[in-house]
Structures are given as C-alpha cells and as structure tokens.
Length: 168
Image (tube, rainbow, N blue to C red; front, side):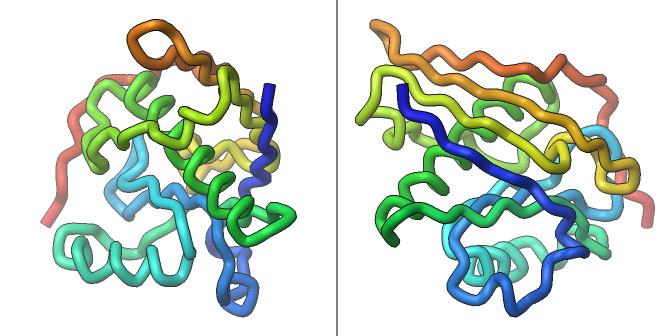
C-alpha cells in the first residue's frame, strides 16, 4: 500500500512566499459557504488559485478562506503525483459526504491506476470543517481498486443537506 501525508493549514496563516512554486492541494470556502466547501483544487498552488479567480471571481462571495496542504515529494514528479492523488481522493470524499457538493466535476481518478491500494493520512486542520470554526483532527482516506473502478473509504461522516443561498 502506498501512503501519502497531507498536513492542512489555514489559508490565512500561509505566507505567499511559501506558495511560490509550491505544489499541493487546497480546499476553498467562500464567504457564503456554511456546510460544504466552494472548491477543491490541486497542482501548482498560486497558478491554480489565479485560474480559479479568473473563472469564479464574479460568482464567489468574498473573502475566500480555506485550507492548504503543500506536498513535498522526493522529486518534482513525485510531488505532482502526490498532489494529484490527494486532490482526487478529497474530491471523492467531498462527493460522498456533501450531498449537494457541485463546485467541481468529479475528476477522472487516473492517479489511482498505479497502485492497488492508496492511503492518505490527513493531519493539521480538517479541510472539510468550515474555516470560521476550524477543527484540528486526523483523518484517513483509502482508495482501493475493485473490478469496476475504485472503492473509497474515509473517516468523515455525511454532512447536512441544506441548500446554499447567496445573499445580495
């Protein structure tokens, strides 16, 4: 089994200088988000956030808040693989625990093809807890290849199904 580690920090506590050329995973919560995140992204963090801002700036309530995990693989390719894998796994969990989560399209989980079972150990802040009430908790995600695709297991419980409304 291949294990990745992701330590999530509050977005507001991360210095911009730490994000230059950093590869990782982020979970954004806009100002209207109460029950589920607005967006999950991964890759080169500053570039990804800039692209997100271009696409969603008019539709997202400011300020944005959230969590970031900077990945640190032994090589640039290993770091990218970790980021892709953790990001895909978080998307799988989000689609499982947040019935109304629709900010991202469920990704193609091609990052899981290389291993029969992969595990992510989440530490630091819980990326699925609203940042206005952050919770420090350890979680685990396991993805296992099965005959017709993938099976995902995790330590989060399903969340409420309230519909998000935007106040103008």
